[in-house]
Image (tube, rainbow, N blue to C red; front, side, top):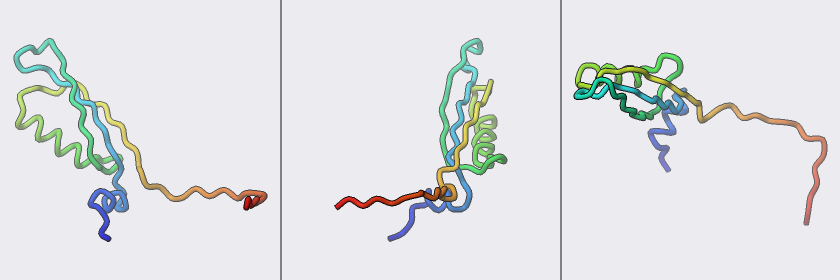
Length: 90
């Protein structure tokens, strides 16, 4: 069985990054529109998000207003806790 590309990225240190992008409407600059972007990226450099935002500013007409970023590593070292007793039920 072969591991998925997403799982491989997580093993390489990538975590799930979510960004809320607020941008101005090209025809109505007083209005803000929200766009949610999500991909696997590396904290704190965020090279994938930066590449997307560069594409946005160079290609799309809606100028960026604000970008809010959340990041979470989904795979972490296991947390083990010793227990004082073990009970078995039949």
